[in-house]
Amino acid sequence: MKKAKVILDADFTVAETDEKLFSSFVEPLGRCVYGGLYEPGHPTADEDGFRRDVMDVLRPLNLTMNRFPGGNFVSTYRWEDGIGPKDKRPARPEPAWQCTETNRFGLDEFARWSRKMGSDVMMTVNLTTRGVLEAMDCVEYCNLPGGTFWSEKRKENGFKDPLGYRYWCLSNEVDGVWQVGQKPAREYGLLAREASKGMKRIDPGIRTVLAGSSAPDLDTCPDYDAEVLDIAYDQVDYISIHNYIGNSSGDSLSYAAKPLIANRFIEDIAAVIRMIRLKHRTDHRVYISFDEFNTWHSINTAFNDGRLWRTAPPLLEDTYTAEDVIALGGMLLAVLRHADVVKIACLSEIVNCISHVRTRNGGGCWVMPPYYAYLHYSRYGRGTVLQTNVRSDTYSCEKFGEVPLLDAQAVRAEDGSVTVFAINRSFDEELELEVLLRGFGDLKVEEHLVVTSDDPAATNTEECPDNVVPTGDGGAYAEDGAVKAVLKKMSWNVIRLAGSEIH
Ligand code: AHR
Image (cartoon, rainbow, N blue to C red; front, side, top):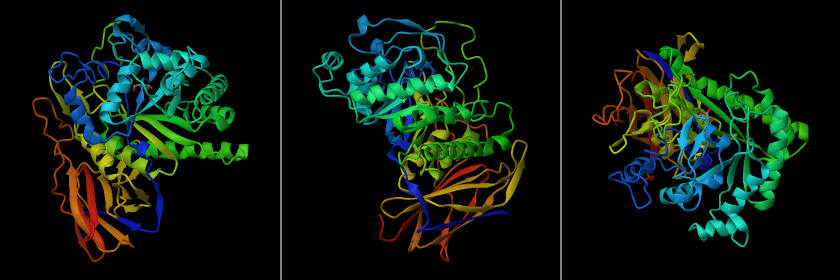
């Protein structure tokens, strides 16, 4: 049997996880909002039209913060369209996804929905087709206590107290040729710097996110990131990067290893940040906001069949299967592994579009297999990330050559319990795992959760929602200061270890 070994030492850590690593992204795209979060008239809709069944499915994810409203959507967005009485709001052609935006759900509704969910909001402003002043107005609307034009408007709209939004994205994917308002690095860097300055003059407590590379394989990466950071470094707090992986070619062996791309992308952008910091001779720290990542198979296919200006049609609704658990799981481990430089991470998106949570208009809400990897990440991934030294047998794939069969990352929670996340990337073989633990005291295996299926294409549907779900039958056990397990083929494993005094 193929083998892998992990060595953990209680004294060797990476960093504390930031709460914002457990965040998501909401864009009024397709049925993410309309038919997803919001569907007045749905049997489960509450007094605001929010689907309770969707909230119930999302609540266990314990999302710290959600980015809103884009995404490509924000590039021509007027935030004022989404506030105040709904009957006064304009319907507009939305050019990013070429749909009609009714504006029935906007900034005000998202504030209400987020409060009900107990999650924070990261707003994205439109600098590229609007500008600095409109962004400052939005900060005023959200964060000033009152006595000014926009803060009084917010009060009129039912929010007596400031919304208190701390995190603000300075536009989205401005490097992308697909973006309305795409800009060369110099132009965007100057614009973002001045916007951040102006927005912080309105509320000095906010933190801003510069838009960096939309994907690691763009020709402009990493020059774009270096140039915008060089111009705006002292005025911003994060740089945003995005990464989607998919398996449109049917090469599952390479797909299972594609999280290596995210690992390297994060490390490369961290190096760019360090280089600019050194150049500026400053102590100011800029961190990575990995505010869009996920599996996305249909990324390169036409999204609207040439049928323009429909209202909330189903767009980007890929089916996600057991094999996607391995790919998403690897991306989640990449985030944890780099908790020293990544401080915001948003799974993209929250419902229906590129999402593992799916709804039917007027009907049910169900989750596809990768949902469970995120659930485990959010439930057990908070704490101190441990340096996780892996030695593993390998397999061979077309895109990356020899790749370790094991991907693993361990986290120690505040109560001293340790979770080892482990992925067996093999599609046909089990993997013998040994975890050597030093300095943790007497840890016992509490639970070994597994998500897998004999069929990589297995998924969940409205009719069969429990086809692929976690089981507790991983079989890990402690022996002679080590934890041992046989990882099933193509499996996501969560091995939870606790001392006898921890409960
Ligand atoms: O999430 C879908 C789209 O992917 C977002 O709107 C955009 O930022 C990215 O290209």
